[in-house]
Every structure is written in C-alpha cells, then in structure tokens.
Image (cartoon, rainbow over all chains, first blue to last red; front, top):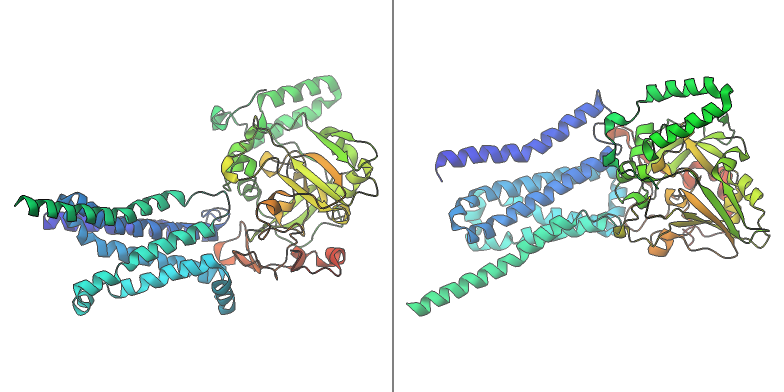
Length: 213
Length: 322
C-alpha cells in the first residue's frame, strides 16, 4: 500500500466517520429553522439511537481489523486505521452520553444519580463509556511507548468489554419485541469467537511447520 | 375479502386532501338525492379501501371535560408515531401497515355480567350520544407524551346502554385479532387478542372516553379505528384500540402487558411521576413534535387529572398498586 493511497483512504475514512455527524448537525439546524419535523416526531429518541448505533458500529469495525488482517495478510495495512476508528467510536460515545445528560436528565445531578443507581441499562451504558475512556486517553504514540507494547495491548482488550457492555446496554434499553440490536450482536459475537479460533489455528500452523522442518 | 397491501397502492393513486374535501362538498349537495348519495358513498369506499380511505368528518360539540390551554400535537405525529403492535412493533409500522384494517362492517359484542348479551353496530354507536371534542394529555409508559383532540362520548354512556349487573366489578376490552387484516407479529410476544381492562368505577368516570375520532375526523386506522377507549390519567397502553368485545366480569381481568411483564406494567398503570418504570424514570417525559431542546417536561400526577380522579384511589397504596 503506497503512502499516497493510505493518505487518500484516511481522508475517505474521516469523511465517512464525520459525514453522519454533519448530517445530524444539518438536521438539527433544519429542525430549529424551516422544518420542525426534520428529526422525526421524537427528535431526542432519533439523536439517541443515531449516536448510540454509531458508537457500536464503529467499535465493531475497530474490532474487525485484527481478524481481517489475520485472515487476509495482504490487508495488514488496515492496522493503520484502527486507532482513528477507535477514537471516532469514543467520539460518538461522548455525543451519545451528552444526549443523555442534556436531553434525558436535563443536566440534573439528582436525576443522573437516580438513573445510574437504579437503572441497569444506564449503568451498563456508563460502564461501556468508562471502559473507552482510558483507551482514548492512551491512544497517543507517546503512551504506547510509556506503557510498553505488551501492557498497552493488554489495556486495550478493554475494547471487548466496552463493546459487550454496549450491546447489553442496547438490549436492556429497547422494549420487548424489538429485535433491532440483533444484527450488531451477531457480528460482535462472531468477532469475539474469531479471536481464539484464529490464535488456535496459527498456533497449530506453527507446530505443523516446526514438525515438518 | 379485498385486502390491499400498501405496495398495491401507488402514492399517486391516493386522493389528495383538497380533492376529497371537494368531493365531500359535492356529496353534501347531493344528500337531497338520498339514495344516489348513499350509492356514491359506497362506491367511494370500494375505490379507496383501508387506511387510504378519505377520512370522514365527525361533527363535535365542545365539552367542559376538555383540557384547556394545551398545545395540540400535530396530526402528522399523532398518525405516524404509534404503538399498535398488531401492525408491527416499531413506531412507524402502524402508519405503514394499518391500511389493511377494515372498519366496516364492525360490531362490539357485549357479554359477561349483563342483563342480556348484545351486539352494537358501529354506526349505531356513532349516533348513541352527541360527539364531544375532548382535548386530553396522552402519556405513554415509554416516557413520551402528546396532546390529542379526541372525539367521542363518555364510556359510561355506552356502559349504561349495556345494562351490566350489579355484580360486575371490572370491564375487559378485546381488540381485533384477525390475521387477514393485521400482521399480529410473532416477535411482539403477545398472545392475541390484545386485552385491557378497567375497574368499574374507572370505566364509569366521565373522563373515560369511548373514542371514535380525532382532529374532527374519524379515527385513522393506526390510531385504533373505528372505536377505542381513552383513559387520560393512565399510561397509553391502558387505552385499548379497535375494540370488538366488551366483557363485564367479577374479578380483575387479565390484561396483555400486565400478563407479559407484571413487574413493569401494573393493572392500574396510573400516570405517576413517583413510581419509576424499572428501566427508566417516569418523572419526566418527552413531548412529541416539540423541538429537541424543548422536549423534556415534568410528568404530572395522574397526568394532570389528579383533581378529577384521585378520589378513585383514596386509601390505596399507589406504589404497590402501580
């Protein structure tokens, strides 16, 4: 992969991640000006699900990078996009949290404490965000060096915890009968299972080649 | 039976409102020629079945029981943001799928503890009492709310016409469950028909409305056509839609959501900001159709009808009987 291609793809990836945010801001502007219904009958709900789904999708794509590289070594350069995708996932998670703090809790501490202590779906969502926080904080090259590759890698396994908590938060949040979280759950489940399977496969491959030599 | 799926009707075939309003003006003129008008009406219905049928106006009189000083939710939102699981579990599903509901012929079967079982035809019910316009707050258990100008008369008027026995302590409503007209999705987890119920004194309360229309027109299919109840101080799911059966019983009847998740949805389900749903707070609500920064508002005890209905629950622990 040439440098020029990487740069072009990075620009495209930034556009793909920021595009939905631009769409959201544009519709917020429309709903404030010419078209009050631009975000649907329940705009709070629209924005909540938009940012929440965005977070889970980006987390899933981030988690797909490593298995895809293992399966298709030609795509190894994908790792150069992983940090950026992870940071965008955190950015969407922050937007999602802001929606809650502003539009559901109305900036009331009492309401938030009440929710966090009593409502498991909010607790799960907050846990997911808290797990993403140290990952975002240690995303600089400096912190990788400081922590050492091994520790940094271990810390970043938290991505799995965050994704799992996020999916649980999604299921607990929707009402009985609604199956919209199913797709993302299946995809994440496959990615989670793939890790040990791929490791086992490569370990066996190594053993076979050792025996042959 | 002729059932049209939505895809069978191109949007270009749906009569624009101005056109059918003109046609109705023409029809009114032709009313003198009685028979001709009736034939025309029937032809119109055949040509425009189900949800795309041109809405009929309902003449209403003002009512002192209407709630003053509220901003009405736009009709577009009242008809496109619905929970009506018979037509799908998502908010937009009923508007999309309820076109297959046939509202004529329609009857309500009355049975149980009554002097004599009866069947009421919808057209007779429409004429039973004068139609009143009642603007009510509508609060869904999911923490959103609307303000809807309903058309109907007090359910008590209908109940009197049913002649219930003194032993009747509760009333149960069955909604239509017909696979030929409704999706009745398996994923909803509901064992059809959808059932709701009220204590007799709640059902007899003058605020409890037997409802035939909204915004001065007959109920759109997705809002529970042709006849439903509206109990403004209870969460929306207590207000059964598209009612086909009314049964008077001695003890608390089984009701759909209470059966499915009793810890989340009580039999009473009075709007109460002090009793939270296990998964979210009921202290606040999102106003449908309001701008995003103005959606959040505090929820009122008994949805703002405390003065009228609190006495029904005197001495009851509302935390226990949620």
